[in-house]
Image 1 (spheres, rainbow, N blue to C red):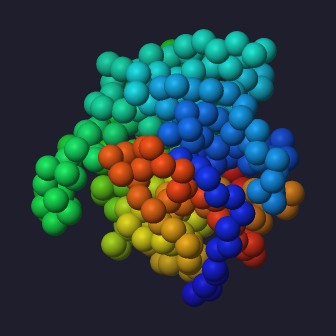
Image 2: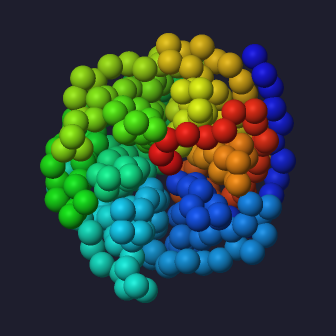
Length: 294
């Protein structure tokens, strides 16, 4: 197993999420600075691209180039076009608590998750030991077409989180944070999902944001630790990346897609960090380039 060590390239975030490499820059959401940002590969030249007062999360682009962003607290997906923002989809009837991560396929289908419960309030109520001893309720993954219509609602996902789509577009793999696993689906021609199966059962892992590499392995942030983990189908761990803070999401980007950008923070608890700017972005240069989406 290969071991890497991350280095810091950007500090001063509230809580970074949904890193995406797009048109030569790293794009990401920041929950508590309430904006979508981009930056150069070396961490310089940070630009506020769009303000999202209702907290941005998952990001992706439609085939025509329009940016989509999850709007967490009002459970919507926003569309940015020619400097204007509009509601692409309202998924509130399918959400329990906040909307969260999202991936957009190259053909424009969107896969949007939500918390399923108030994570921070439940943790405060139960404490750490009871929280992990009593599994929280599952929730839905919402599938939207390129027009923003709901075409499928996939139930019983244990906190749907980081998601990847293989380069051929045939398989979607999603992390179930409180199921400690990656779950795969076949992607039908109409964007709907079928043939649900376990891709990797994980040990001692709250799988969070993730990405795919050219060898078909997944890098994922383990939100319980200061570590990103590379895993192959079946669950074998082949590499780790040690971070300075706890890891919450990652993506392979840079000119050669061999820079692993990692969104880190001391905590994800909004009661502790919403008024602070202690989040950061760390990087690791890895051997195998990124592949697929994101």
